[in-house]
Amino acid sequence: MKPRLAMAAAVGLCASCGPEGFDRGLERDAAQEVAPVDDAGPCAPAFPGDLLYVFDTGVAVFAGLAPPLSALPPNGSWFAYAETGGSAGLGDSSTEWSAGEGHACPGAVALTANFTVYGAAERVMALVNFNANWAEPKAYARLHAWIKVAIPSTGTLDHLDGILLATNTNNYMAFQGAAVAASTFADGEWHEIVRDLVPGPTYVPASINQVGVQVIGKGVPPVSSSAPVATTVYVDDLWLELAPP
Image (cartoon, rainbow, N blue to C red; front, side):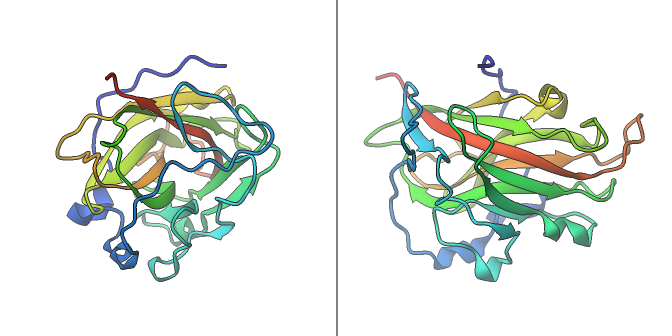
C-alpha cells in the first residue's frame, strides 16, 4: 500500500458549476438520509472508520456515457459528469465497472475522461448523488479514497493537471475539494487521497449531497506537446474517518 497523500489546502474548483453547484435539477430527488454504502462481497476490506463505497460488485456503477441532467441514474449510482469545456467530445466520457482493477479487492469504478483539446479547462467527474448527515449521530474528520490512473498510449500524464476528491453539500450549493498533481499517479499505481472535512461555507456536514473524483485537463499544451487523450481513472475504497470524541 502507498502512504496516504498530504492534501493541499481545500479549494473550490467547480468553476463552471456556478453558485448552484453541480446541478440544481437534482432537487427533484426526494430528500432522504442515506447511510454510508457498502456493496462489499466476500473480500470485504477493513478500514479504521466507516466504509462509504467499495466496488467488489458492479451494482453501484452506472455503465455508459455521461448522461444528460434530465436522465440521471438513481441516487446511489456512480456516473460520469462532463463539466464545461470547448470540446463536444467531452460528453463521450463514461463510467463502467471494472472487475479486474481494484485496490484492496478486485472491482472499481472506471471513469474514462474523453479529453480532446487544450485551452478549454476541461474537467470530468465520476460522482454519486445521495443525501446524508455527516455531523450526527457520527461526525467525520476526513474522507479517504484510492485512485489509480491508467497510463494512456502517449506514455505520459502530461495532458492532465490534477485529480480532485470533492464533496458537494448544502443542497448542492457548497462544493469543496483539494487537488493532487497528476504527476503523483504517473507510476500507474494506486494512491490514497485524503481530504480534511472542515465545516464552513464550502462544506456543510449536516447536508451531504454528492461525492466525486474530478479529473482536470491542462488548459495549455505541456512542454512535451503530448496530445490530450482519453484517460481512464479507477476509483475504489472510499471511507470516512471518525472525528475525535
